[in-house]
Length: 341
Image 1 (cartoon, rainbow, N blue to C red):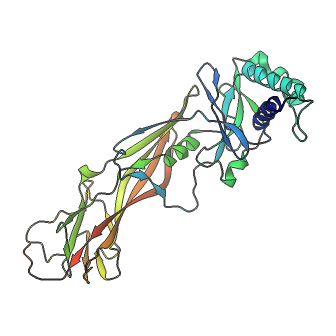
Image 2 (image 1 turned 135 degrees about the vertical axis):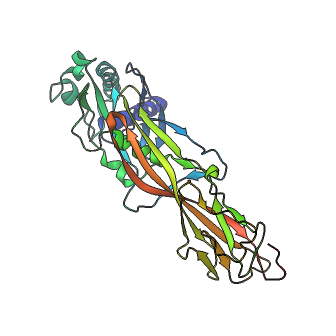
């Protein structure tokens, strides 16, 4: 066999191995009619097919200094793999029979890779790919989260493709559901940067408090909806600002409150804007530097905590771990000279 033809055959066999379950497959796009529109990409384990879960973001997440949130829980991670519907019966039959032709042309399937004839065609447990049930169900396959394909947890979904009748929920761990979609939406939630307001502006002064606040209008709730076309499955994950943590950037400083945790006010704002005449008062949210920064500045880190909840198809709902996003502001601090505030 010419070298080019052999390489093409090997590539096709590798892709077939993914679908057969030798490597967990990542499923491709299909419309509501079940027409398969596969998208392939390569990695260390060969070509894979992409899941067709889609995402839609809402809210003010377009600022250049914004980005994805970080979970506050070390025990929670987004789903690394799952099972989702992919093939209509006749589509799967056409695809697999084409692969068997490739096997035959290169002298049989590679060692250690079952061709699936007995499982899908011979009645153990499926007969002729369930082609007589083409409109009554779907073949489900293992898929990997494209953002976690190298995570060891992505290898946990290693079942061969299996049949599920329409309207049934497969009794299979990690079968896609609204909670899975909520976790995927969480992973793709991006929030605006934490742009704090501070007074005095420009430069702080040793031993005089710097007031810090966030107006309600400066940050808004953001949400991401993940959906699986053609199934009615969807989940919307919503992130709502909850509290602001202040880290002065030096041990020679005191925060207000002492914990550095500024809680959200009833009106949705955080802290209180500085007003003339309050120079000697303790702000509800702020920092007092005890030492000059000299010719340098202190890196004041403002970390906004976002409360995460979700709701989905069928009246499902729940909470997910809070997320955080931090922004650093350089604050020069001068010695007391003459101060008019």
